[in-house]
Length: 477
Image (spheres, rainbow, N blue to C red):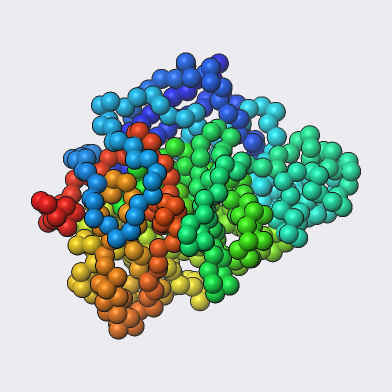
């Protein structure tokens, strides 16, 4: 009998919601995950343990304070429901039956079908050959999954393929890893796509049209996120589980299939949706490699950007194993600020992160890292911050995106004014930095940067605000 072990925990300010499914055997090929039956919920047990010692091996959990929302904002909030925060002492067993948050894939039941979009081209060739068919059939299938404007979702859409081959696929393969739940359209044309996973969890993907002939799809890499960045709505969810490579790739496939006729060719991919991509580094690298394959989706590697909050070992792995672009979410110029708003900085400090980038990029030709900097009024937007930022990025081939903070329910920050953002930008540009102001897109549908997800009743904790920033956070103090 399968047993479930569920844990909701806050350790070292990194929040994870874990559901492990024990049983079943791993396979060489990615399998379609099977939903856990509702009757199995009676076997669930709650336990707490220090699962994230690799992030924070020795630190004690910091003091926690639950702060009320800040009311003054520059733009209206979505009408999405705001769920109350619940202290750890009252956590109830209300997690969805998901796969393990720290496993690369959800374990399948025996006899599950192979997920086609979870295989690299080489793996697909091997799998096709294992069923007695020529490798050439694999190329024809690959092109129909990802190219030729087909983006096949079933065997009926595989015109020109061998009849016996199609029969084998219908018996042993699964085309879809996601189910479309809804599409929300913002007043500026941005689309937020909600996908249902096989275990009932929901992820969000954003398609952002641009009048300069570029359309970007923003994909998620996890259900929720363990990093607990204090300005990010997704971080309120904690981590439920990683997405498989198939679930990541299919977001881009679905975007092209659903919206290409409306928004034009989708040219760019950014891994900036739900989750910390490099916390799921193996599946993210695999998904990115599938996206750039020249016989498939054929995105340019320079137009596929993977973002990270600063997981240094995985960052090194990504730069060594992938030709895709890297974005680093910096958001502060001192450890004091960054360890508060981005708790991962308690493990991988700002100096280590910057020096790692400086060293690793020495071996990359014609490669620039993108630094993302979410501007929070009174926290990280001073002119001294601008000057420190210039010093931090010196010697690193880079571009800098200044991002307006997008308010959400329960947020304790306010956006920097447009005027101050421009002044901040001018200081950077005056020092020779390549810098851009990134406008909010889709914020009226909670589709903008930092607004994705649905935290629900159980949320990761807000951390105690350093005394020197209390006035900036809540002017009434």
